[in-house]
Image 1 (cartoon, helix red, strand yellow):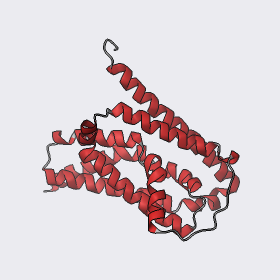
Image 2 (cartoon, rainbow, N blue to C red; image 1 turned 90 degrees about the horizontal axis):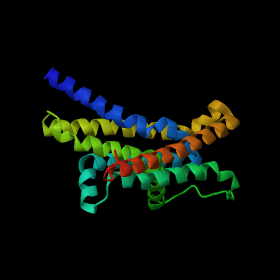
Image 3 (cartoon, one colour; image 1 turned 90 degrees about the vertical axis):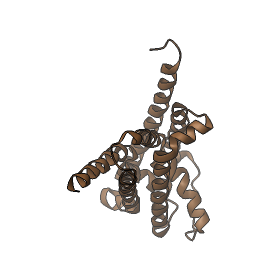
Image 4 (spheres, rainbow, N blue to C red; image 1 turned 45 degrees about the vertical axis):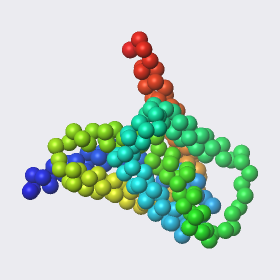
Length: 223
C-alpha cells in the first residue's frame, strides 16, 4: 500500500512538473492584472476563480480526450501550435501597444455571471493561462497514459489531483495579483508588465516556430 502511494505521489509530481512550468501562473499574474485593470477587487477575485476552474477543465479534457478530438476533426498538433501561438503573440503585442489605445474608464463593477464567464475564458484562460504549449503537453501526457503500469482508477485520481493543484496555484496567483503595485510600486509594475508582455510575445512566436518546424519535418524527404 505504501509503495502504491509513493508511486502515485511520484506520478502527481511528474504531471505537475510537466505542466506547471508551462502554465506559469506566477509569471502570468501581472498580465492578468493588466488585462483586468477595468475590474474591481471583487470582480477580479471572481475572474481568478473562474479562470482556475476553466483551466482545470481544459487541462483535464486535453489529457483524457484531446488526442481523440484532434483525430476526429482531422487537425494535427502542429496546426494547433501555430494557431494558438498566433493568439498568444497577438495578446503580447496588444499589451505592449496598449499605451497607443484609447483608454476608456469603466465605472461598472457589477457584472452578471454570463459577463464574468465570457471574460474568464478568452483571453484569460485561453490562451493566457492554458495556451497551446500547455495543451500540447497535456495531450502528450494523455497519449502516454495507456503505457502506465497503474490501475485506471489510480491513474485518473493522480491526474485529477495534479491538475487540481495547478488550478489552485492559478487561483491564488491571480487572486493576489493586485498586491503587486503595493510591493514594487507603480513604475516597477509598469516595467514588469512590459517585460511580461514582451516575453508573452516571444513565447507566442516560439510556439508558432515549433509548429512550423514540426510541419516541415513531417514533409517527405526532410530530415
